Image (cartoon, helix red, strand yellow):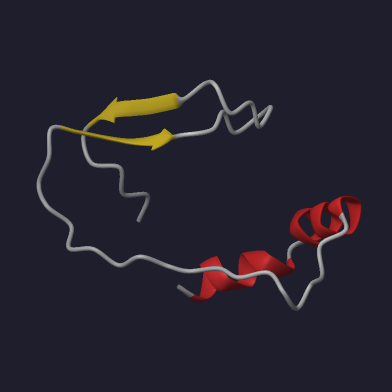
Length: 70
């Protein structure tokens, strides 16, 4: 969780906020904690295409096995 919150202060995140005109003190971040379960596959779905920000496309990524990187 600390790494997630600390990601607000990476060079990339700070540069993005400066470029887009966001106030550094108005940005919010949350962390969801869920119980890990045995699974055959894992994935994530974005309701807005993350690279271009296009609102009419979705992106779904998946892979076999657990998605844990620990």
